[in-house]
Image 1 (cartoon, rainbow, N blue to C red):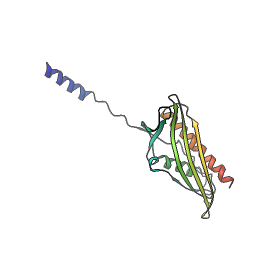
Image 2 (cartoon, rainbow, N blue to C red):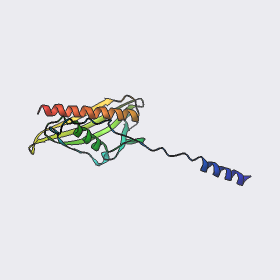
Image 3 (cartoon, rainbow, N blue to C red):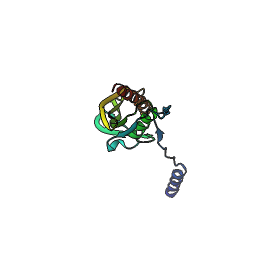
Image 4 (cartoon, helix red, strand yellow):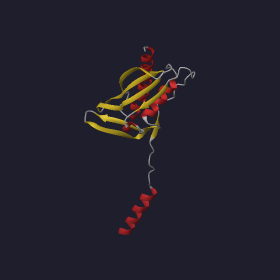
Length: 174
């Protein structure tokens, strides 16, 4: 009887294997295509080493504010600096500047289990004719529609587009 039970358990465990779910890959949505090559900026985005992977980060400020966590089943299709650079470069709305963007924060923060926001903090240096003409710091944040990975993804897409508009407004004033 004992051997029959072991054999049955072995058969059940082999026959009932569950496939491992692969992470879903996300970006900021459809890129805004530049209407012309004229007026495009050369943009470089730099970031700390920990932002150069494709995991979607979050922090539980209410429980453990110093611990960075990651969503297991949702990831960016590329690192946040790469996605941000692509979005900024594809807009085509900037003037003929060389821009160096320094990305400092790109994470979802939970103030409570049911309340989260996305945070994007960066600075931009603008150059024209190899001369630095300005530096500006930006700190953007907004509440997410839902306190989960889907909320983080849609929130970052909105925030990245807002960042592009803020940079364009700043450049127009230089």
